[in-house]
Length: 445
Ligand code: SAH
Ligand code: SF4
Ligand code: F3S
Image (tube, rainbow, N blue to C red; front, side, top):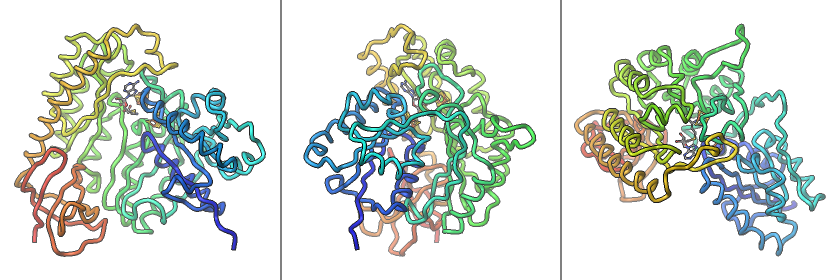
């Protein structure tokens, strides 16, 4: 028997890239490669890159750069760059990193095994980043042997049409393309039959799902959610991400009606200042955002809210930043991801004059993160005494008899028990303590 060649994938960025890495692993496995967790033994290395901020791009380049030596010592090694930096840079990446064999865009990953074959006979490298005019996301059934056996992501759309002025995604992932409802439902059914209990529907802006389909064939996001929730075996449903401008009453109603829809909503606000939101082209105001938050809480009082915030956008004044801080107090998010603004050509804001220094950005970020940490801890303590259903994730490494589970609100909850549980099993706990990054609970007998 010939020994199988080994591949290693390093994934940066969002769940889109995670899902693409899964697909690539599956394709290579079918093409008689085998996965390895040890980069040093790999015959092929794929770096799945993210371009969202300058730092993410640097990380990808520094890993690729570090592979130069490996390629010199072993010319048969295949090095492939995929993902958003690959799409954005194309030939430039090969020029800068001539030891890279393949530069592949997100829409070309389905040809990976063929491209690997071709790479062996083309030492000058191959760039495959064309954006096909009509692209149909293949009805790709995931492998049940990869990833977690109880919870999985299902891509429902790719790309983004919003062109927020700071954001590179519409340039790297292209325009919005929704997958066919039947393909999505088939994928969820397949996963459910294989034992998966929790599904997260994935897209850059899931609320505009279906907008690119013809009117007679259109299914909107709320109706898709309702259909997925009916699939036998699915116990939990989540989605990410949503642009607040597209959050409809119909979707809020889903939180009241669909038992399996988890009470967590990631609703990126980016800034609390109307003038900054306008320059960001977010198409909502602070007021309309807050109105939606209030309404969402009417539909689902126990909903946990999380957000993304950018500090130091060009033109952000002290007063603008104070408005963001005020919004934080008003919403009291359960958690927030916050970032220093990073200029990402060709995203439009790269032409705006940067008025906030790196020092000032760092200062604002630290003020914001410190306050948010306090709010998160306060929020976590509000759960003390309440009962929650958890999906068991596994035994905790911290102590014997300690288990970790995830609540519908998306909190990690640790609890002690000498019983054995299977990951994916649902248990009930009463919360006894709120910590900074997790909760502690006690099993309800
Ligand atoms: N589609 C998602 C965002 C995906 S990117 C949405 O619209 O909510 C994840 C987060 O990265 C964004 O919400 C934003 O906060 C941050 N981000 C995007 N571009 C950025 C940039 N140029 N500089 C700093 N942060 C950025
Ligand atoms: Fe980027 Fe805006 Fe699209 Fe989100 S909605 S991916 S921030 S352009
Ligand atoms: Fe990064 Fe591309 Fe995702 S830029 S955040 S990997 S869509």
